[in-house]
Length: 143
Ligand code: HEC
Image (cartoon, rainbow, N blue to C red; front, side, top):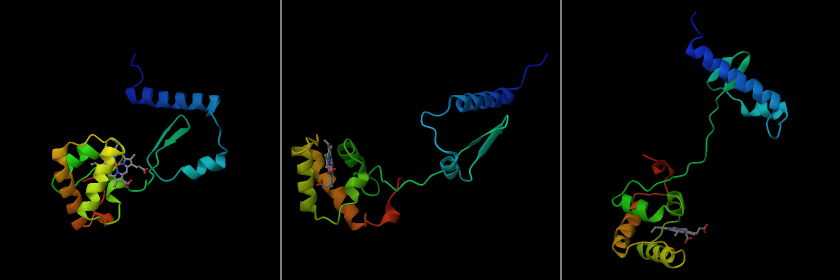
């Protein structure tokens, strides 16, 4: 006798898991009206009268890494262990000397392990990003 096909097993498993979740209930049950609000058009999977809906949400843009100018990788290596790139790139326009004192503050106040020979490259990168307009949101985002 031929057994049930893989998709059938898969959908049944999803359906069973769903029924199980329904019978147990979520840790903190939300009223149905709230649940409705989360569901928007997205891809849907239905099985055994139970439907799973995937939704997409927009998160605020957060530039995670340094890109777009020479020495980006050196800045990535030195400056991402404690905060994201956007924390640095969203600063108001700064002169090279101000960037230098920020990097020194990272070293001395927050104990960032920045190698001395990397500092000129880091400053060159930050100054270059300043010139090409890192404050222009259209340049942001991973690429
Ligand atoms: C050892 C952890 C650490 C590293 C590595 C580090 N930072 Fe920071 N950075 C901090 C902390 C902590 C703050 C303050 C966060 C806050 O105020 O919420 C900060 C804040 C900043 C700010 C915001 C302005 C300010 O003065 O507070 C800038 C700009 C900045 N860092 C740049 C850099 C650059 C450039 C590098 C790489 C050379 C770097 N950071 C590496 C810990 C670090």
